[in-house]
Amino acid sequence: MKFILKKIGTLIITLVIISFLSFLAFSLIPGDAAVANLGMDADEAAVEALREELGLNRPVIVQYGDWLFSALQGDFGESTQYHLPVSELVAKRLPATITLAIYSMIIITLVSFPLGMLGTKKPDGAMDTAVTVLSQIGMAVPQFFLGILLTFFFGILLNWFTVGGYVNPQEDLGGFLSFLLLPAVAVAVPKCATMTRYIRNAVVAQKKMDYVRTARGKGNSEKRLLLNHVLINVMMPVVTMLAMMAADVLAGSIVVEQVFNIPGLGRLLITSISNRDYPVVQAIVIYIASTVVIMNTLADIMYQKLDPRVR
Amino acid sequence: MKKKLNYNLIIGYAMIALVLLMAVVGLFYTPYPVNEMNVLQKNQPPSFAHLFGTDQFGRDIFSRVMEGASTSFFIALCVVLVGAVIGTFTGALTAYFGGWLDAVLMRVNDVLAAFPSVLLAICFVAVIGPGTYNLIVALGIVFIPSFTRVVRSEVLVQKELDYVRNAKLMGAKDMRILVFHILPNIKPVLKTSLLVGFQNAVLSEAGMSYLGLGVTQPDPSLGRMLSEAQGFLWNAPWYALAPGLTILALTLGLGLVTAEKE
Image (tube, rainbow over all chains, first blue to last red):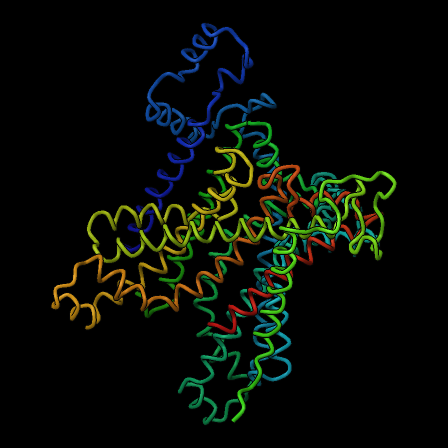
């Protein structure tokens, strides 16, 4: 319990630092909201008056406190481009990104376990080499290039889906889910490769341990040995690693959303950067970073709970 | 006994060498001027005149890939250097001296590491703007934490070993011990981190340029070529293939070499 409280304490401190740094960074950019609202060649006095009105002349730390107070109530300010509340914009884009991330996590879990164990029956055999080569290629391919290749093969050559034809989940949930499958594959492949390699190495290392020899000596079949003895021991670090991968998956979806033209958080982030719509950029950056930190803390706590040796 | 040939290592080095050759030659010579447009030669398929075909403005894709490869190499090299030098410096100092500076820097490091690297790089570019040198600064900062962490944990182990105590007894100054005694001993670990870092830097540069947050017009960049090529997948699929496969050859080569060195 004490451990969990300590972890949560660290989490809160980290979240405050992250949000403060992001706030500071975007308030350092030349050309503030007052200039953005009135235009570059507005009257100096008018800009100054608006600055006073918007509270931009106060010390950064006071502005941050103000921002944090409203942010905690779900108010992240207003987009300078769309003149809509930031929270509303973000909420609209959230489903696509979250679905994409969950989809990718499912693919990573479903593919990397069997693939990782496939070659371990005979380390350095033909099957093992094939898996290793495959995972090397998977780790090296950039997600957006993979996305483009998938678009070309499945969208243009085979015509299985409409390129760039994103389906709104409210209109057609099935269409939405099937459209997101290929993007999810593009996000998942490099992570699958890393995971497969990790599981493969862990299984091979575990198989050399004494307890495996004992279990084999007692007459367990190789299959039972792998599933009941080795896998339990490999599981622990793998579950933690999966939770840590959430960060990479979210980062990957920023890029892949661009490839498949999916209106998610990533696309909103990129367009907001080119529009200099900093309240939106700030909110998304803090949102993604916070999600990652929270996931990592959960992974830490889970590891603690699952593995009696760490307690 | 004859040493067994290591195919992975050979293939890996060959792939890196191929891209490096393209990049180095691209610095001095390209078959066509990279920005020369030719409306009569738009979206040509690969031929002897244009090895990888031409793009939507009739520019020679092979020449642009050569230039793009050298941009990628240059940026990735700078990024890794910035990250490695600053990371090694902070990692070694904080681990060796400890104290409050160590605590503070590690906290900062944890916060930086909490951001997915792409997101952090995007943040920096959003603040300082795109462009080759800004991208180097942004990615360089992003690459610091991983080096700091590796060097710090290594130095923490090394500084307790007998040879360091011995050197101390002989009257060596702290900086001398760090630079001449400890640093040579963590070289192998640093080498692997450099290789992994270089691969990540190539991927990040390509990703950022693809998103339009990296190398700006008119400099050719492999990542930006891919984003332009995406619009022509229907009538000129080879356009996307050329820069994509070049990046893949480089990262795969680096991956194979890293895997063998570990």
